[in-house]
Image (cartoon, rainbow, N blue to C red; front, side, top):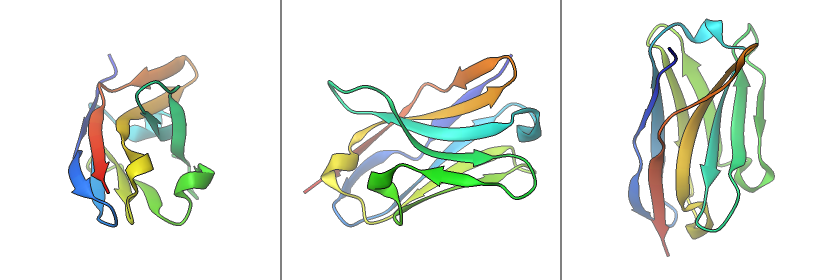
Length: 117
């Protein structure tokens, strides 16, 4: 059974940084893609960043976070990270870790990020 556990959320002021972590219960290489999503109150869940787990590790970012957020993986530690810099109030949301394989999508329980102005 796939388990994803997020941590690292919190309350910060605009302009500050946070690093979210996602711990998995097995090798990340069994997934083809890892990703971070977020959902703000009253809005749909949206993709924030993705990373392929194959050699090369191609990444993609949503336009609002390009240049500010960085997704990375450490397979030895079975971890996925989202470094978030220059945070803005509009980044406030519940952030979810996501893993994908041929069978489907898997989700963590989420970690709250709140950015005050």
